[in-house]
Length: 252
Image 1 (cartoon, one colour):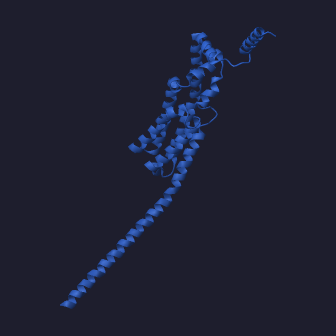
Image 2 (tube, one colour; image 1 turned 180 degrees about the vertical axis):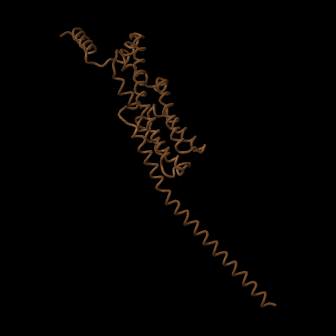
Image 3 (cartoon, rainbow, N blue to C red; image 1 turned 90 degrees about the vertical axis):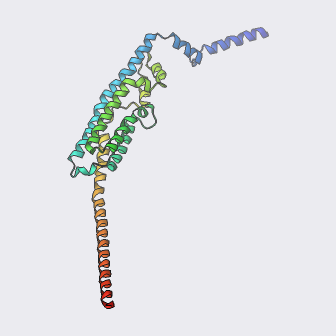
């Protein structure tokens, strides 16, 4: 076959390879497809993402508030509930709460939990600094949950600014392929229940309350040891006074 004919045949083969239906589109082709999209499609895709986020949060918000209400009710009904009204317990309960909320929102490090964690840590820090009662602290946690969910509902696009184009591409033409990715970025599922949050908090309260009798016994033992030491010192001083008086008598 002449050389020119071979070159033409090779060129046709290369063109056929480029046009093969199974080949992945190039970056330039993707950019061109993006330009050709109807702007209204982007608006509809954005609306679909916002609508799904709002729907999930509307279901999750009452569960979080129920959990903190259950915790507050438990603290109020506990015997000698004043033992919980101190910074040590609030610190322990706060750590448990942030761990559970991190789990609910998909684990640490994702953009959604990072954006709302200040609502939770802020409520804990405020309770410790202001000396709030424990049940009032629990109520503040519920408020923090509500405020965090409202923040996400209204600002999800800015929270996921770095991921939004990817989500939007998956939401075009009514596709729901964006949903798994949203949960991967930290949007909670609705499969958990309020007990997933309240039970660990109540367990923390039970554990803390069980340490109180031991602390009281140790404090009483320490106080008794101090009293005994004072008594011994008083007797020694008394003996010294008697000896001193005896010495004076002998000297006279």
